[in-house]
Length: 119
Image (tube, rainbow, N blue to C red):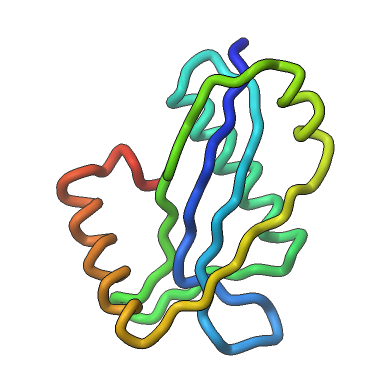
């Protein structure tokens, strides 16, 4: 098994109890046979972490939640062992009114031209 670090960006998510829509960056460490399996494993880890932090998906028309793989690297196994056990959380960022339309358009373009980067 190869150790991987996967960085994911998610947009149009809400933290329970608040109405504003946010985006996040999250880093996930996993072992997998190849990069495709590492992404699948990172998706499962992301969903578990989102549930722990009470983050929910938003689906309002074209402003629906989606996730983009920003980077994926093979790393040393020592780094995975150290980070795998800890909950690294998320780095949240706010989404402005104009950015909402840009991010919705980006999802459409990503789905059309780079679907392998969407989770």
